[in-house]
Every structure is written in C-alpha cells, then in structure tokens.
Image (cartoon, rainbow, N blue to C red; front, side, top):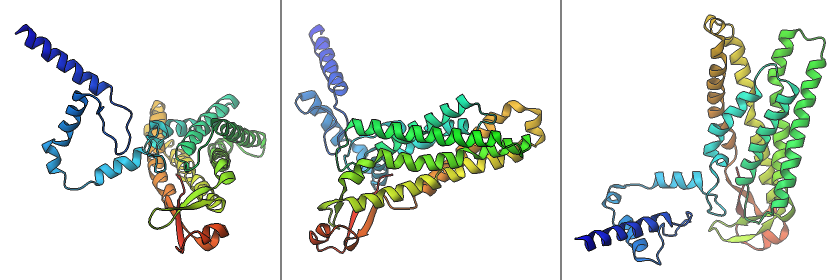
Length: 314
C-alpha cells in the first residue's frame, strides 16, 4: 500500500512539474512538453476533453487571439500595452491629466506617465515585420516624452500668464490644455516610436497572403493613419469630461459632498475613454489595402495583384 501511495505521489508530482514546466504560449504549439510521458498525457487530456463537443463556433477563440497576440509575430503582447488594456490602465492617467489646479511638477509627471504608456502601446502594436533594436525604442521614447512634456508645460505657462482671463475662465481653459498638448505629442510619439518603419519599409502582401516586398511608401501610409487615430482618440477623452464636470460640479449633490468629485470624474473619464478608443481605432482597418500603382515600381512589378495589404498597426 505504501509503495502504491509513493508511486501515486510521484506521478502527481511529475504531472505538476509537467504543468508548471509548460513553455510560454506559442500559436500552434502544444501547451505541455512532449518530451515526457506526463507532458504528453496532459496534452491528450486536453485533446480528448468531451467539453469540446459543445463548442459550435470559434469566434470566442478568435477574439482572444486577436486581443492578445501580435498579428506579425504571433507573440503575446504584454498586458498593459494591449488595446484591451488601454482603457483600464489609461483611465487613471486621464483622470490625473484632468485634475484642476495643476502645478508644474504635477503637469510634468502626468504628461510623462501618459506618453510613457503611449510609447509602449505604440511600440507593442507597431508593424513588426522588421526587427527593431532596443536603441531605437529608447531614442523614440525619449523624443516622444520630451516633446509631450515641453508642449504641455508651454501651454500651461501661456495660460497662467494670460492676465485677461478671470480665475474661473483660466481654470476652465487649463482643463482643456491637455487636449492640444496630448494630441500633438501623440503624433510625435507615433512617428518617433515607429520611425524605423519609415527607414526600412514594411512588408506588403498579396491577396493570398504571399510576401510581395518591403515598401517605405506603405510605411508612410501606416504611420499617417495611426497618427490620425491618436489625434481623434483624446478628443472625447480630454474634451468631454471637462464639459460634463463643469456642469456636475454645480449640482447640489457634489457641492454638498466635494469628496465625490474625484470618483465621479473617474467614472466620466472611464465612460469617455470607453467610447473614444473603439471610435478612434475603427477609422482605418488594421490590415490596410493600397493599390500597387501608388507604391514603389519594384513592388508593382513583383505581383500581378492590383492591390496589396499591410499591417497598419494599432
């Protein structure tokens, strides 16, 4: 009996090891190691799972794949930098950007945090058909953050020096300052974080998914389209909440309970962000199409297709 118990314990330990030793997720690869019996055992437990008989469609699996994996590399995107993480991780930053009576230090901090998050999102969701060294990421990050903070601080200083404004008007204008600051900085951020695509070009594919070549013109289109989405994105996020909050602050409830101001503003920002993100990234398809006649002559000569597609990035 003791031998049986020992064998069972060893089997359980081996199975646990096989589970914990599972490699990082790779599309089309087994979850468990196939070099050991218990790895194969766990793998085929998944294969013969009767619950799969009740799966009638695979759209949920497709949704998860598209939300988590990069379309060029099929590698998992780090959670805070996925589009599905943009709202939960970005909303606290938006609330900070819209706080009234910002000091110079707080303006610099929130703009730095916002553009740091944007830089990582832009890099993680770029066109990754060409390798990008870490040095280019660092250069792009520094350029994006410095430009954003400079623009935001400059606009705030101008508003504070505008003596013609009444204190109430100055406060209202200060609330809208983050939009032009963030919108212009977002353009710099996209271009600087993805500048390597302009230098080396991006892959373009024919209708069957075959590689046609690498195009710098397609890269310019990709960055222009992405930059436009980054201008539209902060419009509802940074313009609507100040308007809504200026009205809500006059209500008896918030005047009697000023502690509710920050939670209410957070909810308003969350709602605005939830509306703005899908609107902005829906402006252009992620897999964009372009006529070969608009691209380099060598691309047009390399295919009989009238159009090719490329991953614009998000």
